[in-house]
Amino acid sequence: MVDFKEHHEAGKRLKRQKSGDEINHPKHYNVGIETTDYISSWDMSFIEGNIVKYVTRYKYKGGVKDLEKAKWYLELLIAEQRTKGKYGQ
Image: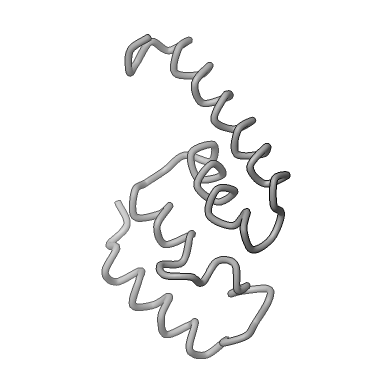
């Protein structure tokens, strides 16, 4: 499991170093907590992380297209969970 506090502090240091860097720290990932920090802190899968990523950034980057991507991943996650029967039907 990721040590969230340590990971978050490292991210803050890197953010200060690379402020304005559109590759490592684009503006749409730096409102409040950085999206990657949130995803890591909850130990999310690739699919779960993409849902959070697209919902988080849609206002700043891809608009409705990002919401459609989030919906696609959410439908995939629902189908996966129904197949596994892990969290109910």
